[in-house]
Image (cartoon, rainbow, N blue to C red):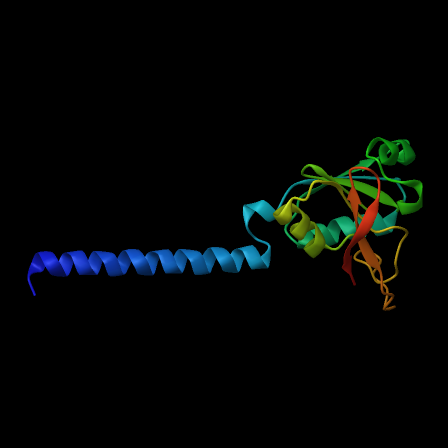
Amino acid sequence: MKPRKFFVYASLIILVAGGAIWYIVSDYYARQGSSPATKADIVMYKNSGCQCCDKWAQYMEGSGYSVETVAAQNLYSVKSEEGIPENMGACHTALVGDYVVEGHVPAEDVMRLLREQPDAKGLVVPGMPASSPGMNTALNEPYKVYLLNNDGSTEVYAQH
């Protein structure tokens, strides 16, 4: 085989192999929630004495997020400003990228929200389900994560 032909074939093989490796690696990181599209800084508003909120923040930091905690003087006004319906409230309200995340929402659901970027306000876990992240109880209490639509309506986004 002539050297020039060999060089062309070798270059094509390297190019194709490199593209395949790039695709496999980027797909792997996207599935792991490590791509830049699935991470954002979090600002969490909470009452100053709430320890489960702090545990949720630690959980989110363990999932690769940075969390700034703000002791809210009036948490209800934060919820109102962010459009959280009264019946969907929880102990803390967080801002993640362009979304609001109310309550003990799992990191995997936040990652999915940031990856899919639905036209919505954000995610809500109403109340304080015992088995949700940050509650740290041994109870296995099933709960739902709701997508909060722009009109204030909700729909089930995930079940845990």
